[in-house]
Image (tube, rainbow over all chains, first blue to last red; front, side):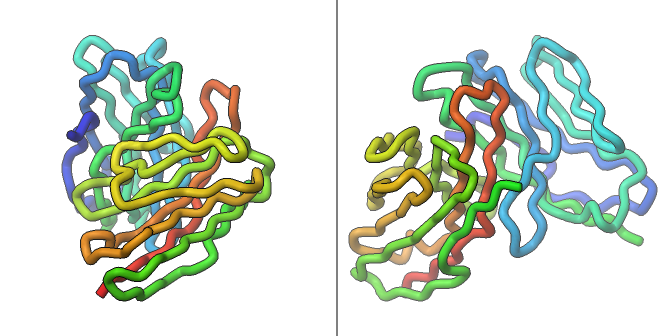
Length: 115
Length: 114
């Protein structure tokens, strides 16, 4: 049962364009929403994360937008570069108890940035 | 930098074999995790451990067991490998008590069961 739904599955963007990946969740107990970036042959690595008490977080060219009422969050990559070509996973984690250990991942988005 | 090392990059095993996947982290993290990654399904949690000798089932524990005898080492065991366990296996670690503690992943073990 997919508790975090991610779209699109794949994305092709021109160099310099904006890449947008969307995620929706169901469990209102989630309180930490990280995005992970994975290059071929490597494990996922934390890219940026947000908590639900803020609506936006920006780190360089990467921005998370968070809509708590709609239970949606998205990753925007501004001025996309070929080096951004990777698989991106959104994720969500409950606040407490053993659930606090259970990060739930979206299905992933394969981004390709054309030079 | 946290380093999570998985002992094998690729493994090919036969149906019915007992398979051990090893993972070591060097940052004294309390929490360790095993995920499997499949196309279109993302990462799914198999087991996790928050302390030595402690283990908890994740979302897909069937057919797997784990062992954590030392803080830095977390092993995933396939008691009798089956073809539907062909997958990429990712080990991760994190700090306990840090509210926004991210997962630190190894580079994965691609297991093929024939």
